[in-house]
Image (cartoon, rainbow, N blue to C red; front, side, top):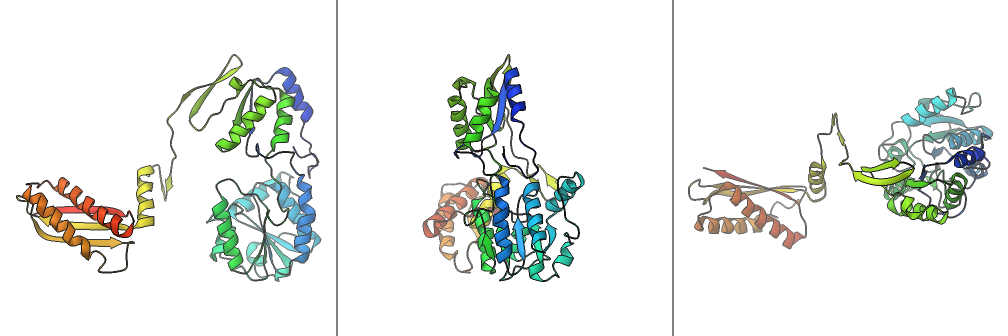
Length: 387
């Protein structure tokens, strides 16, 4: 609820109050900043900081922000025009969203400011600004590709300045810092929220949440949009504002909440799961397949092939061991060959000839050897062939 919005469109607090007077059965409210005290900093505070960054930058400027943040993009365009720099949008969502915003009259673009990306890449560095996606460290985003040196049009140089005009969405910290380090390695000056006020949050902190609760006076509250610690913090604010604790509903994906006769209650849970997109296929891959891929990616795999007599179960060929992504030493598996052979000989003496049982023996021996010697857990694929 920015009290000094760039477009002059104030939040209709009176409208919220009227709805509160009529009676609000259920309020669902964003919880992301429920642990942060106070009120949101006005968006217009960003402008002077961006102006200082643009004034001191010697080469190209890359500004990364959410592709839906029209006000932030507007401020970048205004500052770029003031410093006689041309602007190019980078990233499909940025190009698409700003095109829609311009068509709706929400984005004001000074004449002759915009330039196509391929043309912008040929301009002198002190005359161009790239407005980019990728503020959350997404590896396939425009900024992520710049940080890894894979972008088709933009190669980061030592005199470039990169501004991350965004906050860290919980869970994205590692990805964002990876991008910052990648850009720094290439020589760019990286400016982010921790070193300059280039971002103010769009999520309401505790002061605004309490304000909304007191204005609307809801009978029931369901905190949404946040991790569990955020939901809990928001629930405490609701109780402090006078909402009975039993009327605060904490739910997660799949939970069923019924609102009957003005009372909200958690009444059940629907079985749900992630739907994965894998190449051109949707839903064909599940958690088990992903677990196997993680093991293969982190630990590699070892394939053990043994040929046994179909009657006696005795080893007549092998064992043959082949590993991928495990060790570059061709002799690494020699010690385990004798262990597998001894275990299978003992099984033959005990008249164990079932291929499945023999496979389990091979898997167990190889797994224990790898764990004891390397402290690793690769995927082990035993194959027992009968002749």
